[in-house]
Length: 182
Image 1 (cartoon, one colour):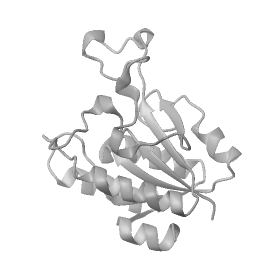
Image 2 (cartoon, rainbow, N blue to C red; image 1 turned 180 degrees about the vertical axis):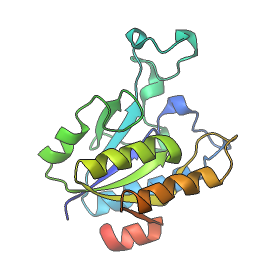
Image 3 (tube, rainbow, N blue to C red; image 1 turned 90 degrees about the vertical axis):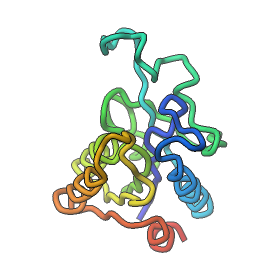
């Protein structure tokens, strides 16, 4: 297997700050990133980006604006100088960008997916990766639903789709490191 780690929407504009909702997941994503470095697996950060021409409604309420520091990977996941950064234009990490090209150029056939949000970007990215014929592994304790108002079962439902419909793995970080990054 030729593995790449995809870290989704772990950018400043999403409000990742100590004490914020879901922040405890950041340490797990850092462990995943460190294990990937040790295994010499490439890391690809995929973050949302919006342009004013996207016509996404009230532009003053948009947080992931092109040319702002909101697009930067959070400090806890720095440095990113040896990582690849890709901007997605909609829900999936593969939306209107060159992520598939990057993975194929790196000759990767397996993607390990982490980040937010399980019922949104993680689910859509896993679905597109599956349809593009990548082996998909979602790191269960490196994903979360990034909306505090959602009931906890929303994450479970999304991961059930990854398992049962996409026939992909959903496993905890320790198992991912043992099976894929050691």
